[in-house]
Image (tube, rainbow, N blue to C red; front, side):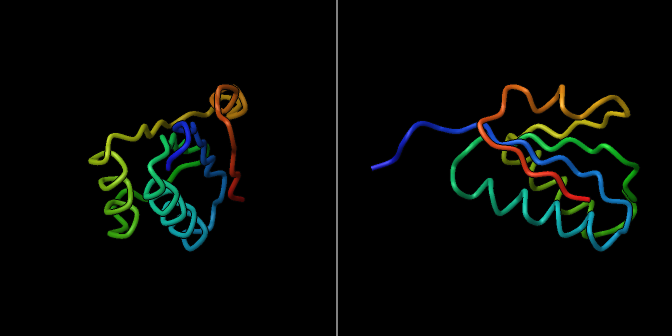
Length: 87
């Protein structure tokens, strides 16, 4: 039996490439539970990095939202049932 679909928000505020990759892998993993995942890229990420490109592509292909913002990421997370912040 499954419960209602939750809205999860993953805020990627990390600057180190290894942490960005880890955050995006975590977002993909969260999406496998059947919940809706919104990823907010609060810092610049290296789109040329194959792992970053693959994770973002997977999330988008599964119908999840990926946004880039230089604004306060808290605004993007207000409607979420749960929020993960990666620094």
